[in-house]
Image (cartoon, rainbow over all chains, first blue to last red; front, side):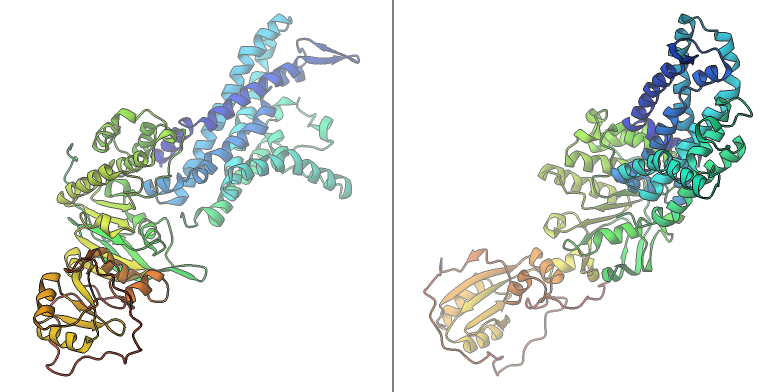
Length: 265
Length: 373
């Protein structure tokens, strides 16, 4: 199993797709960093160093949105490349135990999700800290917010990568996988949440995007939930993590039984 | 040629009662055959005969509808470290185009637990050392085939399964592959190589497994198939009965084709010419037709109902490469009146067919033959 995971990691690092995903994550993080410096104060929007807890946490977790978009993409790529370039034949000849192959891909997605997240933090360090200093902000105040925010962001990236990998296992086509993974989190889920909220007064907070918010909940000061944006209460971080794991592993397991055991012709 | 490391001994590949249905179509139908170590077995049949499906079932990539396939007594999925036991060359498209050849092999060694040092050895074996750092997307089809072969050899496996490995290879490449497979077989490995071209394989294989429409047509040593290839003379004559009787007495096997035409199996110009002259048989046309190995193959793998080639076969051997001893013979085609169907002449009883000899060339085989050994 260790060999399989190593091989999957090697596969990912010897093709451009994952690296492009990481690069886009870094660029999007740069955008997030810029946004964190745009502060509204008494109705005036200014580009200045964040000073509030929320503002500083948003700067630490400036890569959150990038991860929401790119970690599932990375996960989709990790499995659909096998179909797109017909590498699955070679993969299964090396180890015909298909469940082991899926498990190795889950593990590799977690590792790459974490790596992607670290790249995002590196961007925060490289761009956010100099900007903070230039704008007269406090680096030590920022450092105090790393511990509450970073673990949630790391976990969110890793779990979203697994979620993408599960979606990819289900649909097999790379383009369709990316569209479905992002379509669910960015388009379908807000619609479902809104419908249930307005019609049934139900708080649907276990879908992937809301679960991710819960996992990365440190971005928001404790007790505030995320009511400012959605009007609903998030799951606790560990329930969110369980929900996200279920989405990732659930789709992977369903994909395994529906498609991955099929004939490879 | 660089030596292949180790002295791998291959296991026997056993396919028993294998059937694979895709919907209502049976791609493989109750197929059974055995592939022995130390020999190169050609897995032959026309496109769509079920060769690739069979090989993929053997390699556990495709699930059989029924029947079993094993290598050394085990299913592929039950072989510990399969890459060290079995090397497979399937279609030459199983590469990420952006991955370098070395990285492709390195990925394989990591998954299979093979030392990275082996990569250089196999690259040298297949002649790709200089191109190892290039991206596979820039490789020619022949280079991809070599890279596939390099991957198959990484684990120094005792069993090699190759699906149409000569696709994309130039004549030198095919010759190289032939020598290479011979070399590997001499080391005691089991080698199963599929092709839709018997002519290409005739110089390579020891044994043949011929399939058509998912069914076994024949299995046995190539020499048994070669024995079927033979020469014959096609004679158009106004006195076919007399010619048939004369040929019969000379130990040849005359057979009617169409009215007024006799095919004399086993005859050569040197045998038939003097016979016709000595007996003053009137002939309109004499053509040498040879039932070569490819024709035997075609007759085994096509049926009357499904191919124009088969219909051609049904009228006699397909290849008339040489002309008769009288030079080009293209007389005007006389409009002969319809004649009664030629029947074997009365007279001496027909001699028994020669032992283990070729069956008469005629309508192609309609049913699978039993394994010959």
